[in-house]
Length: 79
Image (cartoon, rainbow, N blue to C red):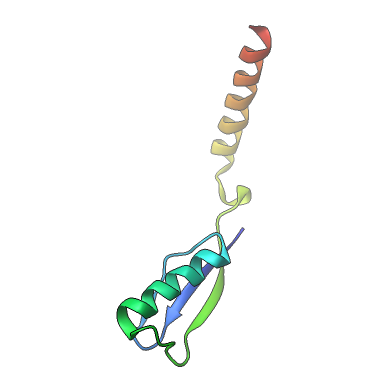
């Protein structure tokens, strides 16, 4: 899963990663209003960074998650 980050070169700040591009743009709009009077700083960028995915989870945690899900499904079926 990719994450979207807003970077303001004038302030030297970077937003937290957002799962949706629109949320990063909303963050940028708020930042511009609060810090730059609504103006767009020259050189501002939106970058895409890798996020965490299922493969990033340790094998033991993946196994435990699958086992727990199977137990929950079995309990629901057997009731």
